[in-house]
Length: 559
Image 1 (cartoon, rainbow, N blue to C red):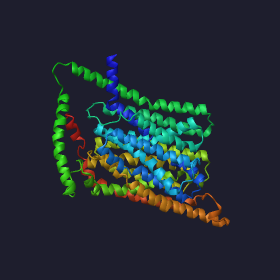
Image 2: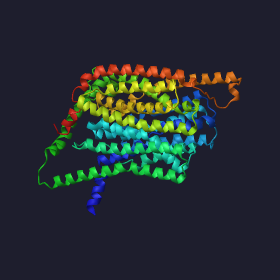
Image 3: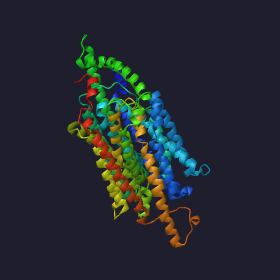
Image 4: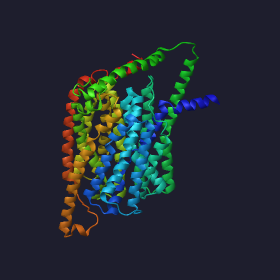
């Protein structure tokens, strides 16, 4: 019985089991994308107008994207502590929202609701920092596909959590808030000790394994899409919902089989190498020597980093080397990324947050509106894995700059916004697919570009800083522009009917005019973001034309 137990310990401590655990944590880390499903409950129960609801949406986006605290915490504490803090914040934030919406507590002030949703949404940064950053460091040469897969599971999480809530609570959307409070928190606690940084190893079939994970996730996405369509046509019993959730659960655990298989192969190889008397393979010797060489080099780099951080911030290293936090934040490349993210992600977040009200204003039934939200979640996944895998393939094979893919994605997002501004029958279905895909594709590209240009040493903090522009863009485009213009149109409708604002509890706008002007503005801003990203393409084309992963192969002792 010794060998099975030893293998079990080896597998749980291995890189591949850590990837599986990260997939599950990420599958529960996208609760913010379900805001469009339960926002109407908040609006109706608490009597908010659209501007107030959009303010709540802004604080959700603020919490979801301001991950600097989680990044800095990860620099000085172990991964398990980061995950536990995120778990506690997730439960506390969403549980308080559920208590307010179900009226189990006194009606909170608007600032309190903003605080609750900000805390709950901010918890996903701790899951991102704990799981995503760890996996990128464990698989540095496959960071594009790794980011695509992990963020892909986040994109699917909305549809996954919807299936679970239908199975457990039925169609009561208020209970969805309770589910997204306890389930993601439980996942982080269960896998808290299995997600941690390991020594990267050179594995020849590494990319093939990631493609196996990709195939499983695609089947899961297609199943979720099929269920989304069928559930709108057929009235499911609770047993049918439970069966659907069971299938989803089984598919989520298929990556565990793949992880165990890979760990079994590695286990056998190590045992075979261990039986060779006093001999070492070239790779073994390289792996033994590499940490020593790396430690000497890292000491020198740390000393230089301290000097450059406080003495000469302007003397930045070459692209691809390890920047200090201040060097990266004050670089022109980061400022360009910040501007493109402000326009692209800010516009996409605004569109996704308003999807429920867009469907309502155009006269779609509640069931159909929920299908729009699920479509965004599923195509969010496809956008993430597409941008991760395809940009990695184009980078390796053709040395195509990754920022160029971001330009194409932002141009696609413009089309989605215009379909809302100028709707036709069924256009919201198409717009949901396009907006979901474009929104999902932006994040893996942003995170990969940051890791490539500024190094992995302070990646925990830098990738969280990189998305700070997103909530700022969301606040200006969502609260100050979209929400204000929506309420203006709604008040015009009330004035035509001779009704005052104080006489209605919920401010609702009906018709194509409600979102026309806001989405023309969103399309223009996103187009500007695409043009800005082209500047980064020109600045980095020489860097991407070189072998950017060469140094990692040298560390592994493989030429």
